[in-house]
Length: 170
View 1: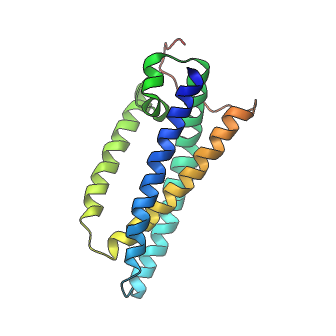
View 2: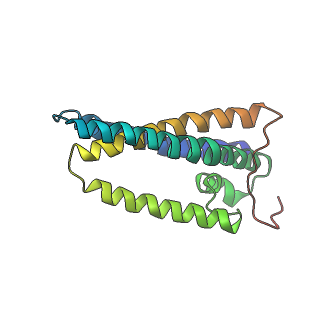
């Protein structure tokens, strides 16, 4: 049951990231159908650099991906029926984690929803320019999740914390 939960948790997150990359990739490409001015290109490059660093490197590579992999490994080793059933949410840290982490995950999720609603209203090419940075960050995130999962399940030296709730007992 544990390996099923780990696969479901990892697979659910990879599907979510992949589908967002695919959908936003189309919108990004649409922006290049417009005649872009120098300031469009400037904002595009600045956005790509910012999103690669903040979302890809800091958000995914240094924080989310190692924790997701550690929680998937924990789920494999200590399965509980509810955790297996809700594995993508468990691996993402929506429950059975520290209060601070859980609050951070919920606030980040709500913030992403608000940003999606705002960016959705932008006209092209601005929407595509913003989405280009998101696609880059999510792609970086997808690669880092796969890398961290491979490390978590093959390396005895993997030491990322699953940040389980205080008092949690497997």
